[in-house]
Image (cartoon, rainbow, N blue to C red; front, side, top):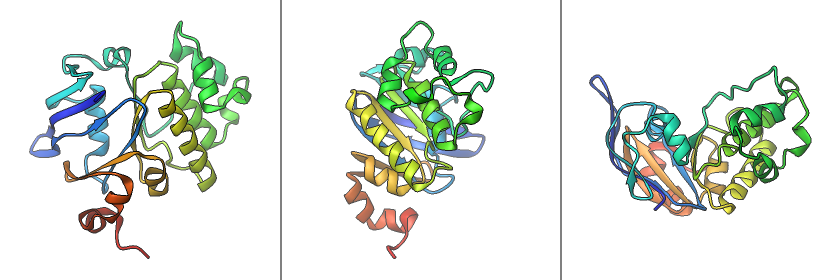
Length: 227
């Protein structure tokens, strides 16, 4: 398994935000991480990226990255996005990607997300969906092995969400592992190979989207009864 956790636990004072969590994602697959508000999804992403202290282990190719700061984890191949896309609005799209890429070429990220037509545009001219794609391309320009996505579909309409899902499958098709946190269940259940469901920081269920959708525990805790 490319990326996995062992008994990942994050505490803030007396509050346990993530509780002995064991999740994983392999190269070439999209894995969903879902749960109710406050379940610990973003905290899990923060821990994987090295942005919060935790107990337990985070392993990349079975090697611990626990001692690595966020920038060193990114260099090792664990790259994350944030819920709010912060672009450099004084640069065009190309400039934003070049800043993230450093000396690496941006052609693969541009082609994978099909945003070549946006390269010379100012970021202030972009729609929310386009800004999300540029933010994703910026992360891909870092040449990740694992991409941690925190609410990439937030603020997108249905068509934009569908387009995002197609791009995520292309990312996985390039051999990159994707861990997707999002409340858009159409996106998550439609694009993911597997889904981890957490509640109160602990793993509630894990499996194929169809199995998770039908799990009574998941329905009761998060998805709700079908209409």
